[in-house]
Image 1 (cartoon, one colour):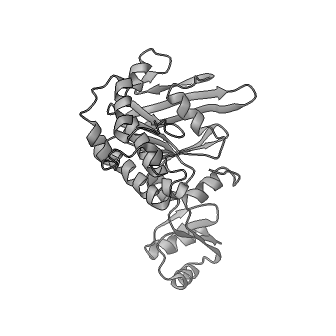
Image 2 (image 1 turned 60 degrees about the horizontal axis):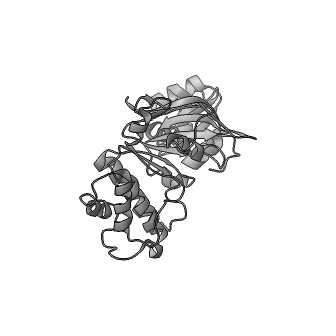
Image 3 (image 1 turned 90 degrees about the vertical axis):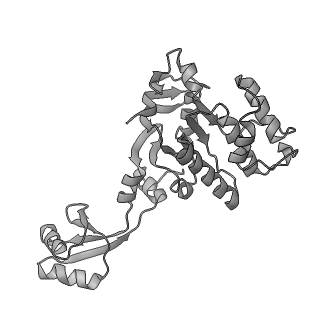
Length: 304
């Protein structure tokens, strides 16, 4: 697995607080990596470190294999575009003129890719309309277009759907998926809207109190959160025999707990287990969401 970005025992402290506490995480190339954590967990601090806006207190990170202490990290950051917090835009200029200025600051040829960039983010028809009169969603998409100048391989987005209306959220989701699937851009994004993040991410990093509570792929998370019946039984071994006879999929969840999937007839299942000498003590329906998974992971006291 080739890594785009990785941290090694990364720490960041300020005068009165430690925000990151030995954070170790890995962002694979080609992923949409969702950063999940409550306010103050260190998501924005991590992004600012990656962008070179702050320096680590201890530990380190690599970007495309280059350590942050290496002078070549400047060249590696040219492969990255970022929108940290709110995009920096010139409100009295058009979208096209904002992109022209961005190209000049980056030393890029001005004109060739600008029309294609505007079309990509859905702003190709804005014409002479200045940014001051753009909706929040339009401004966010222009910020992404600015970050895409120079054709980066990595796009870093800090709360890209915060404050957007439902239509704006849909447009942002479709744009992020297009950039990842059609242009092979790795995306690292933080969001507290977990229901929306679950529609995007291929990988997750759950931050809690400055540490990585868990790193998991979307496929692994789907298996963990899969809808099932959790049975508490008197004899787990007999239960397994009965479930095998019924050709039902299951996993052992504890000493007396078994998760059973795709149960069509609960009464028939209970009778089948009774025939093999296993009584069902309790039955619990489980259908965990990303939000409930996160809350259980951090002990129910996090606000992503």
